[in-house]
Length: 196
Image 1 (tube, rainbow, N blue to C red):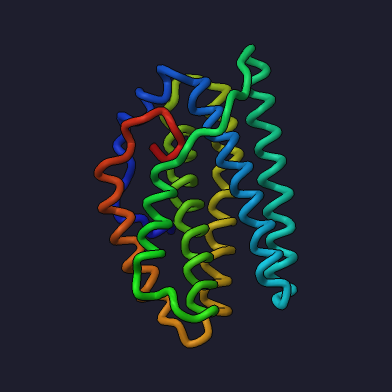
Image 2 (cartoon, one colour):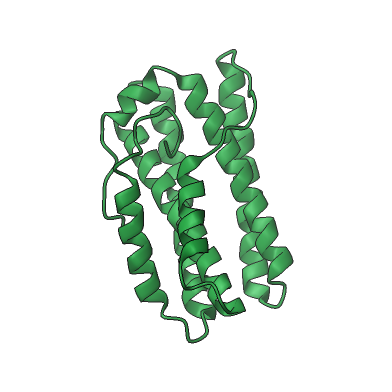
């Protein structure tokens, strides 16, 4: 369903289990950044009422998820700590900035939607792995509950790219982006971060 071309190495879970605090902190900030991104979409594209409604809902949901992850940290006697950089997200952004597909406003819109869709797709895949493979039963249930909303967000962003990508070859661009992302994954899956 997600269309990702390369699966995460299952051994990533073993890395995560060695530092639960780190994955939870990183996850919390991923949720906060996703909420900020949704707000940014509202500011940039107020002419699309359906997008504004969808981004409002996503923002609220992402902040609720942030709160839930923060609660998991507190339950375990852990603290949030400071925001971590996300090299995976940086690499995706760089690819889109350097691509020849950055000219028009419609093209920029499509890139923003595909960027968000890709992050949601990979997050969903990682949540699925955690829900099936992590030894911590509480976190298994927790990540299962979050996985479905990530999949929904992925389809929302992809849907808007297709709907408002006026005369942009969205499917071709998405296919190319998926190929790039799969090549990226050769260097990720080695750290206890959500995308690392």
